[in-house]
Length: 247
Image 1: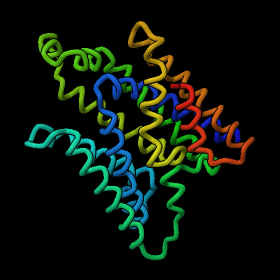
Image 2: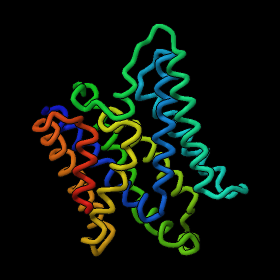
Image 3: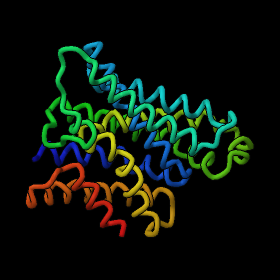
Image 4: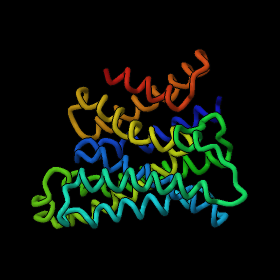
């Protein structure tokens, strides 16, 4: 339970500030598509006998970059994301079934298995969280300006596409970090719900990011407590509590 609590806090620290940009830019489905693609990363990692974290990170990043590159090529963003999210999830699930000699618990990847987090997983989660925070801190002003107005960003000498790439990289990192804790189907919830909860209580972007981290941390620890008390699945319990906080 202590390792699970530390893992939940690590995901909250990584996902909540990034979730603020997802909410501000109305990119909720973007996070969903990147998360769904990670199942294909799990299949590739198992087939090539490489760490699952690496496979998920590469595929999530490839999906995010592909979506960014295809935007504005004749399809509406929500249509493009819908096609890519569901097709990548389906291809991933089929690919996993063809990996020879490997039996895996798909439910653990779909809904998370936070109680099975090891010390090495904790290092990966907190290392990923540190990288995400470092990326956001480094590019905070540029990301904010590009989010507010691309023309204003150009006038200030900021390239909005570069800022989009930074956001894309951070999003892929969060997906790779969070897959063990809340699973593919619930990652988007941990990105969006704490940020949406914090929004009415924050007067500045920085305060919203901090409030989102607090909401995510309360959801992670409280959800684990609920899971322990009620003998319910841990990952979904965390998201349920986040939803209650939002309400």
